[in-house]
Image 1 (cartoon, rainbow, N blue to C red):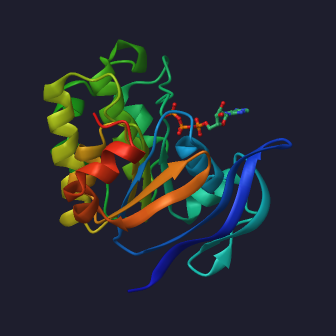
Image 2 (cartoon, protein in one colour):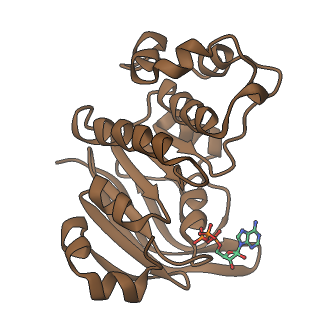
Amino acid sequence: MTELLALEKITAGYGDSVVLEDVSLSMDEGDSLALLGRNGVGKTTLLVTLMGLTRLHGGAIRWRGDSLARVATHRRAQAGLGWVPQERYMFPSLTVEEHLTVVARPGPWNLKRIYELFPRLEERRANMGNQLSGGEQQMLAIARALMTNPQLLLLDEPMEGLAPIIVQELVRVIRRLISEEGLAVIVVEQHARLALSMTKHAIVLDRGRIVHQGSSTSLLDDRATLDRLVAVA
Ligand SMILES: Nc1ncnc2c1ncn2[C@@H]1O[C@H](COP(=O)(O)OP(=O)(O)OP(=O)(O)O)[C@@H](O)[C@H]1O
């Protein structure tokens, strides 16, 4: 397997404040990682650090062997990092279809395949970004990231605030991306069991440090550790 991403002892934060300390991890192509931990431990900070939106105080981030340290956010997206931020960021003046076509880049994902993955978005293709339900917005946020044809998808709490039926739909999609499409995925999720059930590997953060690293199935089976390290939903 080819190494896709490697973090080596990174320390990062906002301005002078340090949030992540001594974080190391690596992911191969097609790997999937659940990033867990209680509120405020630095999960989002880790994703935004991958996108170059924090200050890297120390350590190294490598993407396919090359340093990302001085690479601008949009270049990271072009290089294959697909970020689905917690806030979703829909544009009120763009239709669903425009959201998808403006970011399109060559690769296996195109409008036809996206609409096959999310039939709901095809039904809503002419609706504006601000006319969508929370679930539809989340589908569009994921679809938009896929249209950039990423090699690694970063999902920040994709299930947050959504109805159980939408959660089921998104779980189906994320499972398919991981197991059938072979896409590498990092998923930050409060629903720890759900995230573990979708992924191969898991990392738990506490106060900016990795306090557990292992296979998702072993953490799922280790109820005591899961309860101790994560507020289990
Ligand atoms: N833009 C920012 N500027 C300064 N500090 C920030 C900023 N964003 C987050 N922080 C701080 O960084 C720490 C980690 O926050 P982060 O959002 O990464 O945690 P999290 O694990 O994703 O939490 P949650 O599950 O609540 O989203 C917190 O102490 C938070 O207050």
